[in-house]
Length: 296
Image 1 (cartoon, rainbow, N blue to C red):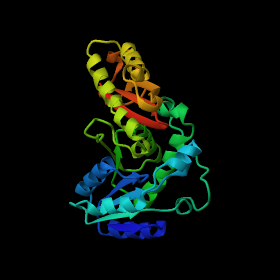
Image 2 (cartoon, rainbow, N blue to C red):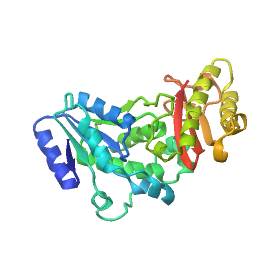
Image 3 (cartoon, rainbow, N blue to C red):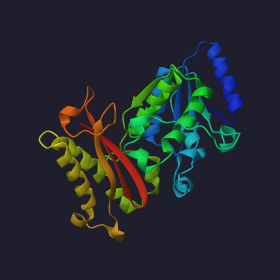
Image 4 (cartoon, rainbow, N blue to C red):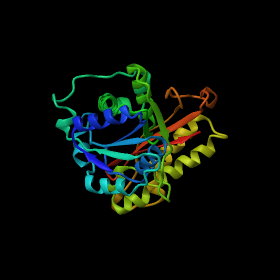
């Protein structure tokens, strides 16, 4: 594993790899790595000759300055984790750790991306500018790494749809590889934000996935609206049935059942297309915003 901090150095390494006919895999991250990230990197090393792992907290995708300030930054630990991974097919893993000034040398970018209906639901209206900010940094990483494949986790399900739309817009021949969610033993979807949870909140958080799993079972005999209402009510009243210390409670922001491809809400299970429906949820707990999905 080699750390690279300068875009020019990464460009030179990529040009050398391309001249040798090597296939490149890209794993974009914001650092604070966990087993979910490592699963992406491990897959990338099995499927490519050279792997670029970016570790960059992208300020322009945060519409909440407090969230940006609190986002975990654990660069030394991240590099150590990457260094422990077997490289498999890949002959080298490059950890790209640029500064904000290196990624945006001309100051805050002015380009803006629009993705139509796929960004107008769920996260879109609640985090204005978020997906455009994601697209800006991912496009720059694509330009720098020139990957054959790029790897993203399914926990950020809407983000994957946005990146697919970005690839359609810019016409890059990059294969987007969507990888399954990695969960803790108690079912909680792994997330860098989990480390901000208090011990009591961390113990409570697996109820999100447990509720979604029950919702998937209910979908066999309940209508879409009934399942949605049950999920929101169950989490909102969780603290009443299971009293928590320090007044901890779930504050559901949304739970939407959408077509797996278009991300548009459905009213009936039969309205889902070829790949079925997905339930996407965002929940606040202990001042931390957690997201998860369930496939129906």
